[in-house]
Every structure is written in C-alpha cells, then in structure tokens.
Image (cartoon, rainbow, N blue to C red; front, side, top):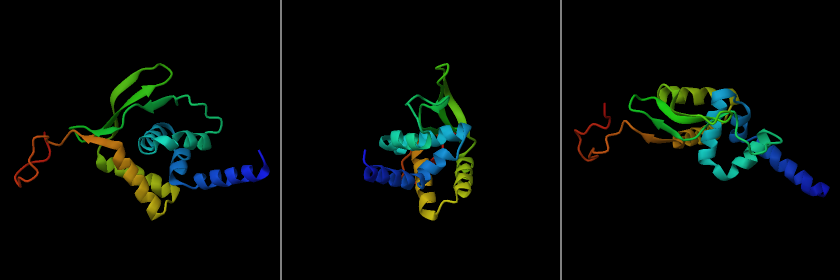
Amino acid sequence: MDAATDLDFKRHADELCQTWQVRALAGSRGLLNALITSVLAHNFEDAMPTLLRIVYPGFDGSPPPAYFTTAGRIAKSGQIVADMADSRTGFVSKRVKIFDSEVHMRDVFRKLADQMKLNDSDRLQMFIAARKWVVADERLDPTMNPMDPDAKRLVH
C-alpha cells in the first residue's frame, strides 16, 4: 500500500470518527452500548462492520457479551422491551425491559446527545434512528377505524 492510499484511508477513518454513530458507540458502555449497537445495526446494517472496526480496532466479528436480538417494541404496559442474548451462555431473555416509557427512552437519548455535544442535525438523526428501532406498538388497537373520531387508539 502506498503512502497516498494510507493517508486517504486515515482521513476517511478520521471523518467517520466525527459522526454521531461512531461517537455514540465509542462513548457508551454496558446496556446503553448494547442498545446503541442494536439501534445502529437496525438502521445502518451495511455500515456496521466498518463502524465496529473503527470503534473496536481488531474487531473479529464475534458478538459482545450481551446484545439485543430484536428491535424494540412498546409493550401494552408502555415499557420499551426487546429480546437480549448472552453470548457466553447462548441464553436469550425474552422481552427484557429497556425503558420504563417512551419519555424515559427520550430522556436517555437526550442525555447521551448532550454528553456528546451533538449539533441539531446529528441530534435529529440520532432520534430518528432511535424511533425507527422501535418497530411495534402493542398498545395500538388493530381494529380501530382511524376515521372514527370516537375510536380509542390505546388498548388496556
């Protein structure tokens, strides 16, 4: 590899390090890191190998100790849940509570955005990705007629 190609790759890697995706992945730990990884994988599947190699040099493709196997869902109780796997034991926990509510999820992502000092554009992109990660709302009544003004959207 010549010096010019290496320099271009390094510049490209440095540019990627400034993205909210890389910063969020690198700046989170534990359950929040597993959540950010899942949000990014759900929204940017093709870019994940590159993102993971930038954040974790030497990344070999092996799963982290714990990771989400599904995207998020809003349970009838209003909690945000997802299935989570333990890569050491292979055990999958179903419907693990991630957030108490949508407001709790919003607040966690707001705090992360504040800590990373995201600009408005990056903040908006992160919140859109987080919203897309929640793929189902079990509170919605599937038989509701949206044209009926007396219809109730939530089922209890």
